[in-house]
Image (cartoon, rainbow over all chains, first blue to last red; front, side, top):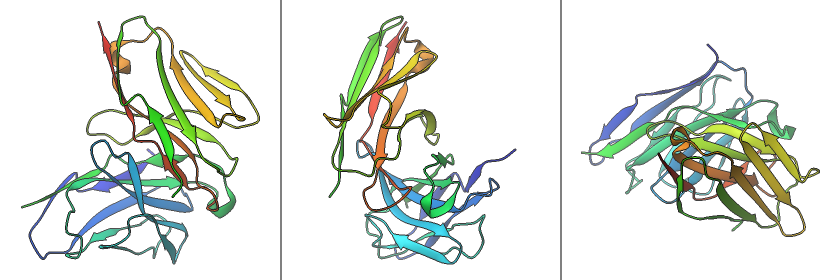
Length: 115
Length: 113
């Protein structure tokens, strides 16, 4: 089955700890995205990548880092600098690269909480 | 910062009724305007999308209306069912960033049996 897999489904972070959220897609999509969802806030863009080995900051990148070493993978690290990390994190992908108007498709999210 | 304003924040509709959710956007790239449906604990799923060269698109019970001059678009759910109870998000293309979207803050729809 083609799709976007996010893991783990639930994650707990201790103070001062970095944690990494996994996002894998087998849709052969060029572009990938990370969003943060808080109640009543909609989806806010953290980072995005249009092609392998390239990524850009979104609206709320502070305290987060990403890598895009493979087309199918776009992991997100929530660093200790992110003081309010509790949220639902969503990964998305889109076909066609930089000049495409294809829709974004989402994984089922990772819920991150502070211990 | 570019915004998409979505209303209402929550909506209660009786089974069989019409649910209407509205969105207004600012200057944007004219690309396509999608609506997403999200159930609790799940990621948003693409419901229906419209390109700005048409004023209306219908898929089953779901219709998008688009008013380019007013910079507004809306989702109509006809014959609403309890299974439609979910949170709905509109989105608009982000200006200057091909393929990126700006999302509304969502509308929580409850359809009462």
